[in-house]
Picture 1 (tube, rainbow, N blue to C red):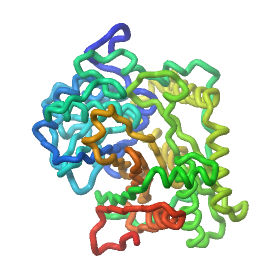
Picture 2 (cartoon, rainbow, N blue to C red):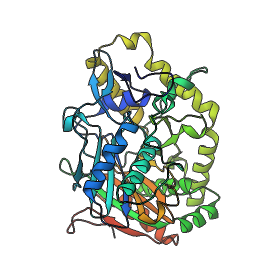
Picture 3 (tube, helix red, strand yellow):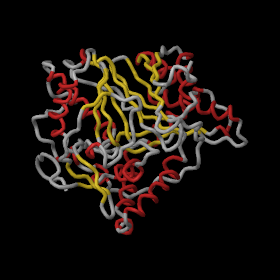
Length: 438
């Protein structure tokens, strides 16, 4: 196990996966990518040699990212990766490729560059977006120092000359699993928002860049936050998608929204520490105006995202993981059962995922060298798009990514924002001769 007292240079031999990491490791296969990407578009062309030096300088400070995954008799586990790398590579056309545990020297984090863009891809078993952004922010600071810039530590940039603290490697789920457990109830099937699958592996990515101040103004108009406003817009679009299909029995439209638990439970962990909320609108109850959808999303999230309910849910998840019977089930039997459970409880009740880690903030000395931030989620278990957003300064990047040929969801989403008076600039990796957005 990783050392549990004092400072440590990293795991001494091996350490267990947290509650979320167990699931992502069991699910990972060619038709599903539990990988996400953050990118920083810099103001100057990227120097790949300086970036490689920054990676080598930064990785030892984050031992939780410098691991490989191993399969035990009953569970996967992490151990330090002594292999050469990870190496900075030129960017690829299809990002967020599925992780293959025995390829690329076993590294579970990737680094890419293209012109002014620096990208990091992370296997979700290592960390959630909150932890990965601390790592990425620190890497960018070290990279700028390699270019001769004076960038201080602090304001979210960790000191790479200090050893990591044990709190950064803690399993925060286990730490806070101290109340009466509550398992999340099994929700019914939601509208799946699927379509025609692209050939393997083709990840269609469409990004919209919008002014944050305009989004704030529209969200304020409806009395909601930006996350609630964009969630409501996505639900509105998928309700319309389903209505065009004219089903005999319309299904609810529901989102999976990851919630960063660090806001409610003090923790410095850089590992996973999230739960999922499920705002939902059922068209079988009648038609909804957009204002009503926004209100429904707002009140659902405010009602269910609270310390008591979330702690009971995370406790239930941890208690299930530590069930004595489950401990002795061999991994070859455990993995397919977990995959089936995920399809029933993690895919079937949701129409799409929407994640918004919020504003990316850096020390003032770094700000002039970064133009904007971008985010991409890897492919889902079925041909549908997921949505993610991140802001830097007054620019928010809203990304749709998936293996779906049709463009209805992203096209209508950005059209909705334009009709709301929000300026949108769209970029996509789709072929020029394909059915594009507008």
